[in-house]
Length: 80
Image (cartoon, rainbow, N blue to C red; front, side, top):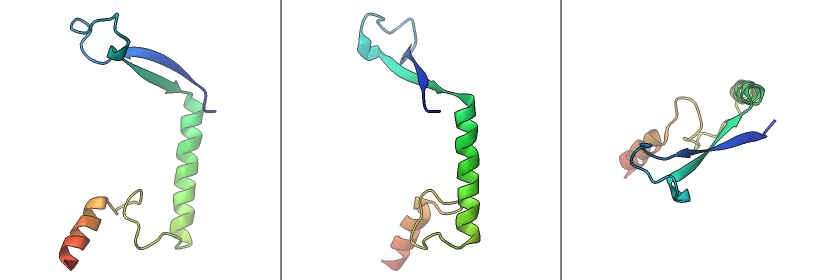
């Protein structure tokens, strides 16, 4: 499910960039639609399981709903 078609696209405006220089291109991969849907479903179900069974760490602030790294910085600044 993780196979993709990689297409080279110009980084900036087409009229300004030199098309002969390879550094002006960036690779863009289009993953398959079904792979994206499966990944989203697994993410939602895993997060529901973690919340339901209270498996999240209290010290984790990134990649957790309603807990950002900004909250961590605020907590550190308050404790200092």
